[in-house]
Amino acid sequence: MLSRSAGGWARVDGASAVTFVMALPLLMGLLCAVADIGRAAYLGMEADVAAQAACRYAAQRVAQGNKGPDGASALSAALEQAPGLAGEGVSCSIEVDCSPVRTKEVERKTFDPQADRFEGQLVGFACRQVNVEMRVGARCLTPIGQAMFSAAGAIDGLQLSSVASRTVSVDADTEVGHGRR
Image 1: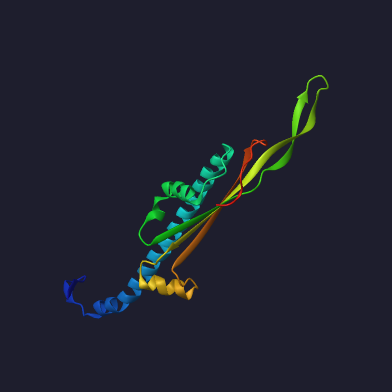
Image 2: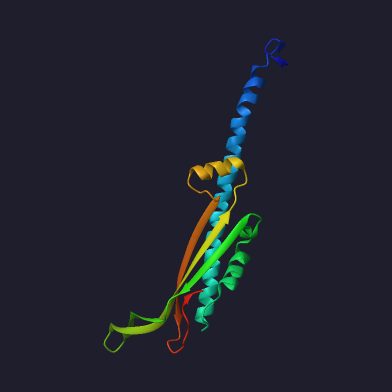
């Protein structure tokens, strides 16, 4: 191999080629590990987006006086907002929990112009807590990633979970069901 030096062309031995060939497996291993770690980070962010979307959907249903969504409709709403979870090798499950109706008291202050001061008054409103847990499982893209996650204790590949919660104001006279869906 020839290379240009300050005075002209000079012959370079094959040491750099041998070094490259010896380092190539290590570089490929690092590239595979980075690909699987990047995929895990991406799926984790998608799981967060999906859990928030499912919780928002469930909260809207509860606020409208419905019993709350079943798992299939909540999962459908979640996957609509996080389409990256519908890919090949990715499995998703969701659990929606709606608490019973409870009354929460809040102090409301109003200004009385005749007394020229604020007066506090306790006001009660009915509310329900909506909790969503999104679980995502995915296989690794490379055998190196599988070995890496297995060494970390994840035998079945990537196992991710995300939780979202909202408090929803409801009509106290509405009879709504609760429990796991």
